[in-house]
Image 1 (spheres, one colour):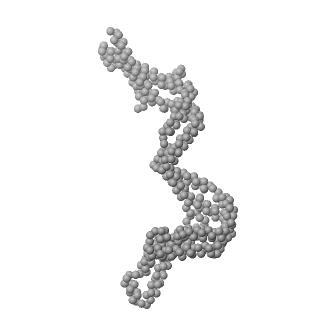
Image 2 (cartoon, helix red, strand yellow):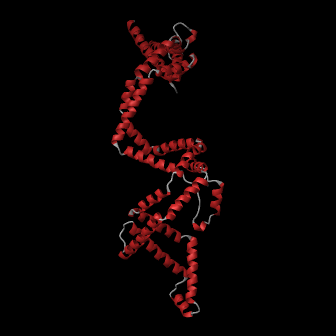
Image 3 (cartoon, one colour):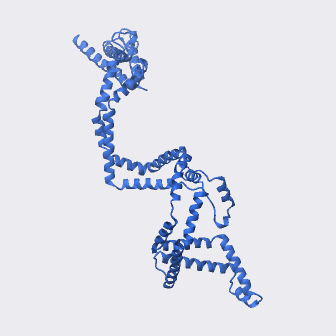
Length: 449
């Protein structure tokens, strides 16, 4: 039961009780001296409670509307609307929400720690990435890659035309002459060779060759066939042994090229291989064939490649995430799966790079007290500046919100917030009236004697 129902019930019970306890007409007690005193005491208490409850009901109701239709000094809220509104605006804007009060509260918080807590416990890292990715993806999707490609095409064509094959081969020879570069190239080739050797098509071809050699070895000699059968050396096991030896040799070569400790014999053979490979690279880089090849590539790009289409396609795939063209898709479908050749749309490399960048920046912020202190000071200074710049708009916003309410809406709005507490005034008034009535009745009864 809310306080309004309690107040109404108190007033109603007080009025009914007062009517039933009048000593001269009371049906609930005999008319004796003691009975007259008791009934009189209760009657005066209930009458006083009724008067107090009615008075406070009138006062509470007069705040919002006209009780019993009486207009004199009633509807206080509506009649004093402007003065009350001005006081509310003044209090909220200049006392409650002034810049000093707000900044005192803000300064008690460490905004950097709040941000770190958001990153670590509120999935903030993922949410920030999602916002940035979605924003950039929308920008990329709306970008005109065709216009951009046409703009950069003349620049690309000019740069390709200015390429000097002699300078490229000279630079290539200089780079290859550095030992660590040529070792990385050879290690890469060894790793690629190992992958190619284990490709299903290559393994099948090697197995066929092993079968052919075994048959030639056995020939018409039953003894040779018996020996191979006796030691259970079939074609698949020969292939497995070959694979194992190749893997060991290539792995040992790669380890030696990377500077890891290996068997001295393997190290010596790797050095011989590296020397021969390095000489080969240098000869290729300085040979006229390399220059001719670079010149041919240059001529191919300047005469046969539509640079604008290529640039636009690259942007569409790598920036927008578009699929390959139908011609490339057809090439992918016709590729031999056994060779491990499968063309797929390029991944959005900018997304991976951006994700790593965001993670590194967030981790750097979390682990840097200096950055945290700078961020906290920046946020608080910015908030204070914003409050100073826009504090004048607070009264305008409050006035605008309050002026949207008509008299009825304003009355209902205020009453809904304070009515429950105001009803306690009515209850307290009834209780206080009852106490006063009891006291006055006892005093008047004593004065008779």
